[in-house]
Length: 284
Image 1 (cartoon, rainbow, N blue to C red):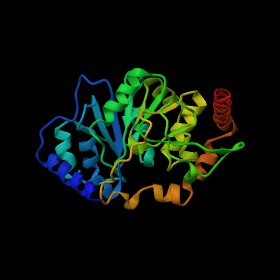
Image 2: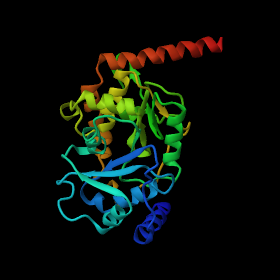
Image 3: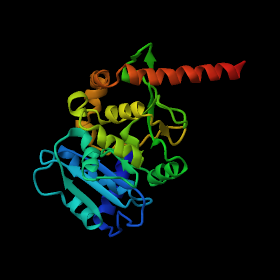
Image 4: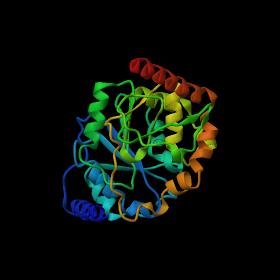
C-alpha cells in the first residue's frame, strides 16, 4: 500500500509539472482506455505511468456523457495539452476501451494496446508488448493472463482459473486487461466485423468478448513473460471496480456461459488434449 501512495505522489507531481509529450507521431502503436464515475479524477495517474516509457502514436480516453457529464478535471486538461485525446462515445460499459476505436477506423495498420484505469503501469509495459508483437504478429499479446480450466465440455468457475505461468501462445490463455493487452491489426478488423453481440451476451465483461472472439477465429493469446504482471492499485480506484460483481459474485461465469459455446470450448479442450499427449510422449 505504501508503494501505491508513493507512486500516486510521483505521478501526481508529474502531471502538475511536466510538459513532456505523451505521444510520438513516429510511433507504430496506439493506446486506448476508458473510465467512469469518480475514477475519472484519478485516471491521469494510469496514463502518466503507462506513457512514462516508449510513447504511443495516439493515446485516447473514451468517455460517455454518463461517465463524466461536466467539465474535464484539470489533471486531464493538462494531459490534453501533452497529446491525450478525450473522445465522447456511447455508453458501452467496459467495452468503451476498445469498441469506439474499432468504430472510428475503417481499417487498421497499427496494433492497439488497451490499458485499465485503476493501476499504475511500469515504464517498460508498452515496450514489452510492442517488442513481443514485432517478434510474432499473429497472436494477441498481454502482460497478465489466466489459464482457462474446463471440466469435460464445460468451463470451470472463473475464480478457479489460475494465473498463467507460461509465455507460450495458447487458446487456453485468457488475457486480462489490467496488465495491458496488444491487439494485432488483423484481429482488430475481425473484431470490428463481428459486430455488437457483446451488448446482449456480456455487457459488463469486455475480456470475455475479446477472448471468445480470439478462440473462435483462431487467434492465440500469449503472455509476454512467464510471470504475470502484478501492478499496484491506484488508491481509491477499486471501490467501483467490476471485479466485485464479475468475480466475487459470479458475473463472469454467467457471461462466459452465454458466449463460450461448444465450438469454442472444443477448440480449447482439443488443444489441452494435444498438449497432454505431447507431454506424455516426451516423458516416456
